[in-house]
Length: 328
Image (cartoon, rainbow, N blue to C red):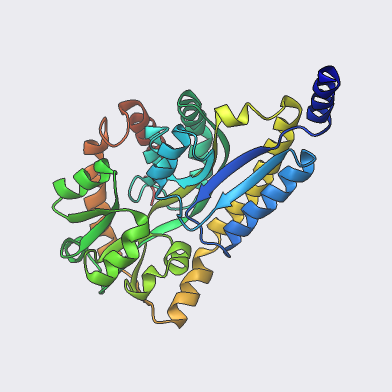
């Protein structure tokens, strides 16, 4: 009798293999296009694996900020996350190259330079125990403030939001004579409402979806930096997926990443237009004001070498900079 029971269990395990549940966290609010793309990825993963791989999505930052996501992936509470440079810096510190202030000004340069530096970044991510599913830019960061700013001196009068745990950026602002306040991104709206912070650098799409623009209702129309993101999964969980399914799932992720990229890269103006309809004031700097910003930012660059990013990455960027930015 016992032998029959054992055989029945063996046959059941073969016929009905245990589902692999991948818990994925994101700051993207439920109902946004990005959230919808992740839902689609989960559906396609389930179809490609006959239901063996289940993607469970936790949107709206319910798991916490991006550094919380990394910590919870390390201890196995979640297994994957869609994160920006802030979270990625925990896995590959040189990813800060993408947010060098006023370094990139168009996506042509972004694509060219990413092709050169991303293999090294992916190796860093892999070494830290994670698999990169895809890269996806989610727009340009602009300054959103509670009053009009035009020059760096205007910004010095305000309290700038920096991510909690991002000590590099906080020290950079401090050394340049600016005020910064470190908060979790999930606390930024209340920080704006209470006056704890007055300025945030973010994408128009996120300013709209998070409703930050309702308080920080002035936007300086000047590309401050690139906001890039990636989808990563804990390799311990990824390696539980049968090998025959891994490449099909990766192919699906790449397709979703391409859609994510298209959404993020070209959503800025639509988001700006929507916010203008609801009270956002867009401030256009003069050529002289733009030059003032650029000169200030470029004066910071030498301080970033070996601190903000590695000396090797800094030297690579400066070499590429002579090709892409010298004729601006």
